[in-house]
Structures are given as C-alpha cells and as structure tokens.
Image (tube, rainbow, N blue to C red; front, side, top):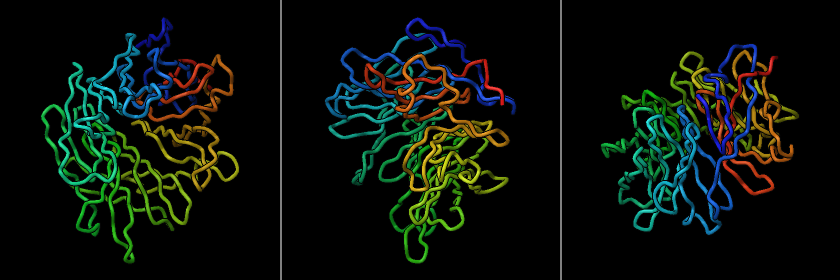
Length: 359
C-alpha cells in the first residue's frame, strides 16, 4: 500500500511495527492538509486502509471546529457534517464516529462511508459531560460514552446499555473508551470498597458479561484505555497520587507495565494509547504523578524499549518533534496526532518504513 499526500509517496510496510524481535521500524512524518482558513488541526484516529480522521479549528471555539477525514491512500480530505464536530475513530469500512451538534447540544454521531450521518439517541437523563463515540470496530459496532456507557450499531440504530460493576450503586457509573473486532469493549465501572466508590478497569464482553480487571497491588482505582483483538488490555492504575500503566491478559492477569518501562529518572510509560494484536504498546513517558513528559515510547514483550523520537526521520527543526501529541496507532504501526511547526499546528501521520532500526 502507498500513502500519497501533497504528491509525496510514502511506503507503508504492513505489520512493520510488529516485526521480528530484531528491529523497530523507522518512521516518516506526513503533515496532513488543512483548509486555508484553519489555524490548527489534529488527527485523532485511523484505520488499516489509509483513512485518518480528526478535527480542524478556525479559532472560533469548539462550535466552529470541523470533523475531517483524510484519505491518505488516494489523496484528498473532506469535511464531515456541520461545524461543531470532531471525528475520533474510523473503521476499515470507512464509518467514522465522534460527536457533533444536534438541536443545540453535543451528540454522538457516526458518518457512514457515503457521508450521511447517523445520530445516537440520547436518553432524557441529564448528561454530566458532553457525550461522544470514541471507537468503532470492523463490524460497525461503536461504543458511546454519555451519562452511562453504551454499545451502538449506527447502521441499524441498535443501542444497548452496558452494565456497571456489582456494588456500583443505583445509578450506572460506567465508562467505555475502546472496542475490538469481536465486540469486547474496554473502560471501567464503579465498585464500593470500605464505604467508598472506586473506579475499576473492566471489559464489557460482547455476550453481555463483565470482567472486573481490578487494580495493581496497593492502588485504589484503574481505567482501561485500549483493547486488542486478542483481548489484551492496557490502561492505568493509581493510588495516593501515583499512576502506573498496566497490561492485562487472560493468561497473566494484571501486570505492572511501568516496572518494565523505565525511561529516565523516575519516569515510566504512562497513559497507554493503544495496543496492537502483536502486543506493541504506545504510551507517554511521565513521572509517577503523570507530569513532565519525556516523549513517547514503544514497548513490546521481549523487545528493547524504544523512544519514538529516536526512530523518526524528520526534515524540519528537531524542536518540532518536542511538540508531538499522539492519540492512536493502527495494526500496521502507523501513528496519528498533531505537531506544531513554523506554520502552526498540523495533523500528523507517522508512517513506519521498510528500513528498521537494528537493535
């Protein structure tokens, strides 16, 4: 597959990031086009067929932001729906999800491949935070975070409320952030311990069952941030003001990932942004308090820990790489986010190349 952007051809090596234990890939940098009146843009999600989604801003506030899809495999970009929208994820069928403005309020929305919109039917219950759809899988099943968590099929309008953890109280306090190909979703729910409500990371199975992932030893709360198609989950566990990343699998249970990812001083991998089927994890290097970023990391069991900045080939000023904010990666190892250059903030795609770094 080849990505064409502004006439440049960038080779994408499928599964490069999940290559043999001898190498990490090098990455090329592609700045994605933005509209002439846009002052900033960020790429927030991508699929495995060359589509990237995100948002661009004209500087007039969130109500003027535009949801955008970039077709980097064939060239071009297009705006999804009306102003006031963000596209957060896209599946291989080209269905994008996020949020937009409907009847004057923020509402989860899906844009089908033909550009038409499908709106999530919000319950009458008051929303404590703006609702949104953070993820959609290859089968067209999305997840929605509103006052409670939902599973949603935009093409059929089917909506199913996800359960809360036992002991969570009368009102659901669950949340959901990701979904895999088989329909298992990752997020969390609320449990009561010693008279206090605590959030625990959880898996919402496609069959309706629920798995409480618990917390790392000594911690009180946790959240699951991503799940791969094998059912492996990454997230964060915290207690007494300190945060640690974790990896959960059916075989090993909850494992302290921060203990395996030292990246200078007291900093370790935090806030895992994604995990591929091969077990490649993308995260940020932060202190136990979750501050003082030292850059982004790639981790895989049995591989040397890699700073992403050391793998990037970039023609611009090196200082630009210090402004990278990353959001997602796909199965091919491509990564999206934003970068600030002399011409402003741009949506960016990091593309793995064929010439890996030998370790």
